[in-house]
Image (cartoon, rainbow, N blue to C red; front, side, top):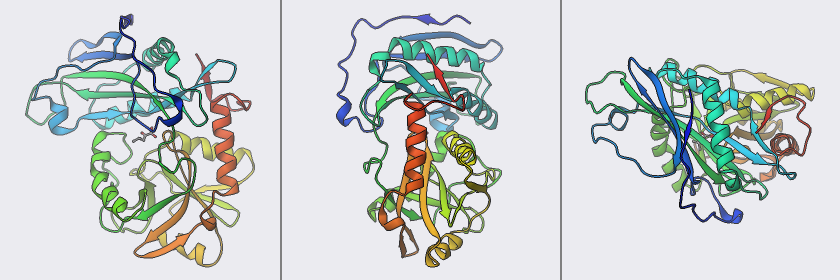
Amino acid sequence: MNINIERTKAPKQKPSSDNLGFGNYFSDHMFIMDYTHGKGWHDARIVPYGNFEMSPANMALHYGQSVFEGLKAYKTKDGRILLFRPEKNMERLNITNDRMCIPSFDSDLILDAIEKLVNIDKDWIPEGEGTALYIRPFIFANDPFLGVRPALTYKFMIILCPVGAYYPEGVNPIKIYVEPKYVRAVRGGVGCAKTSGNYAASLKAQKEAKEKQYTQVLWLDGIERKYVEEVGTMNVFFKIGDQVVTPELSGSILPGITRASTIELLKHWGIDVVERKISIQEVFEANASGLLKEVFGTGTAAVISPVGELNWDGNIITVNKGKTGELSQRIYDEITGIQNGVIEDRFGWTVEL
Ligand code: COI
């Protein structure tokens, strides 16, 4: 399929790299493609970024048939543009689509669309330390219809957003509240899919945690409320003694691409890493016996985020004296080094535009 390109006649002022935050600014262009039952995906195009019209009966607004991905483009010191494992995002989006009854798409076409869009808006890639151009592909049902069924029409869009650190703490350790009351997902549900409703369902817990001065919540499993699942916007790892443990992908956890890369990296370094069930009790007991060395989260937006404090039912532990651990820092340096093209990419993870 050909991608039509219409360039903006009114480029916007770009924000300074110093204070971008996350999700505040959008580049000059966006990608759109439509799906119609019986016709498939059609009319792929890049157009000036802007608002668009939608029926008040739009099915995605009412029933949440809406999915997304997140990846980043980086500008290297010598001016190259790198993407980090974009094919993995395409793979995961098609798996999410399948779970949410959204028709699959051709990954190569969307990878081509991302390349074209990022190239057109390449001056929007920020160059400051810890910054990148966040790429947000998303798909939503577009039928004006109020019956509950999979839609017959969809829109696939991609927008670009220059970003800095996701958390206000930057790369400093964050405080996490272990959520006792609400659950994020159960096996057989949609916890492993990147669908909008998962994030809507997390808001109340996140709001209550914020009121207690915690940055994010740590979700426990939805049945026994015992086993660690993930943190609001990232997967989680524990360094216990010399071993690194991360919850296994049980069907209710998001299969993170930074998570998978971290596991590969640890194995490459010869560090013992296991994916298994880990209870919150085990984490607190490991801390009591002096074995809990580090806790960190992984995610595209969050990158590698050290955790400095955990609060479980009023029991508060400080991890690694509230400081970034040696291993968390090493993983952060390696992954961001590969992403920014300053460390050789031995794994073939980056794609140069
Ligand atoms: C990402 O890390 O790309 C995510 O999708 C998290 C997002 C909800 C901010």
